Image (cartoon, rainbow, N blue to C red; front, top):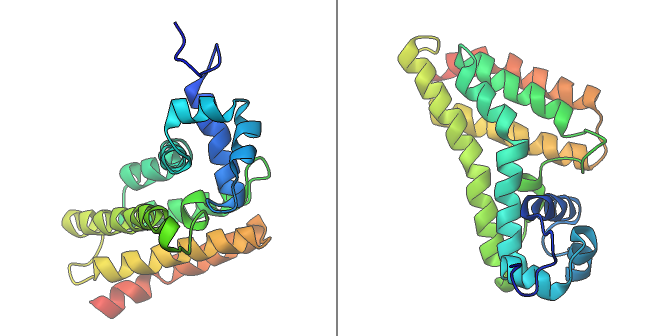
Length: 203
């Protein structure tokens, strides 16, 4: 039996994907319930029955985004043979996907809630945790490189991770402002070229 208030044949993954696209395009605050219900093809009672609230839906949509849109970057960090190769691959990947015409531009996690008032502080803090998660992943990969010998022992993994995470944020904002793949790729390559200087500075 279908849950009360939920349409027959309700596909939660499809609904989350549609909600993700709306939040990604407009951000949390500018997204209205009418935006969401129209995109998801359900009524407001059905949305609340399935997800509880707009904020809870947003949180689930962000997790869905990370699981689906972030999977390739996670694989690059995990599988590339060196830390430099891994972080370079992530930046190059994002130079392509941040301006993919089939999706909203930029990165949902970077762009969907960059400022907050009292009523949206929890949303901002939630996304801030996700934004820091990539920096932590970069740091972990650099520390793995130190342990495996492809990064000098004196390298400051935290500082390098912060730098590359900041570049990643900037690329997302540039994409939202209309930068194309050529421009984003140039930014990525410039940051990759800075690797030896960052390692040498720390060492």
